[in-house]
Amino acid sequence: MQDQIDDIIRENKIHRFLLELQHTKCLERKEHVKQILNSLQYNFKNINEGKNKMDELQKEMCDSALKKSWARLSHDQRNDRINEFVNRTIKDKNIKNMMLDKFIDMLENGELKNNYVIYDKEIGSIESIELPVKKPSKSSKPSKTSKK
Image 1 (cartoon, helix red, strand yellow):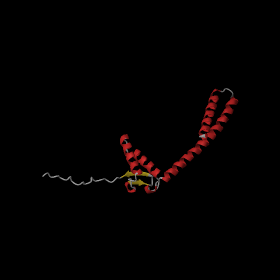
Image 2: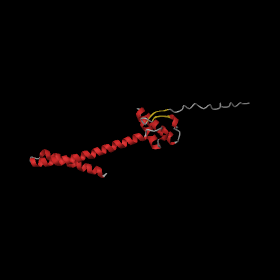
Image 3: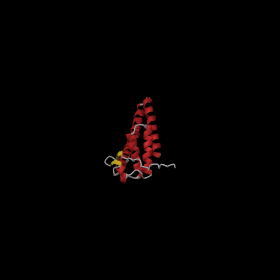
Image 4: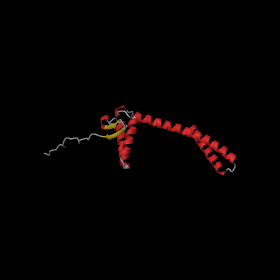
């Protein structure tokens, strides 16, 4: 949080000095403001580059964590991958929500078996979810009551 506050303060200073640079007539002051701006922007660039590198590293670590078999993913990772799969493959919002709820329910209840999920561990993504088709149960025929 403090870093964000520092960034806002730094951006505000840069903005103020840029405005001063535009409106100042004194050449000495313009040179001095340019030096200040260069130092502020240099520090700002270094901070942003460091943050970008950290973000890239974190994304790479998350991606590599997902590049293992479906059975080895944590519950949260499975949940995330199901969410990503449904959002990627289903366009209709109502169907998307219904399917997401169903898959998450199945995951929570242990009904989504490992062999139902076709997972590409090279890219860390679900290719498909193949649920077995339930055949209608053959219930016993209703007994005919005979009237005598």
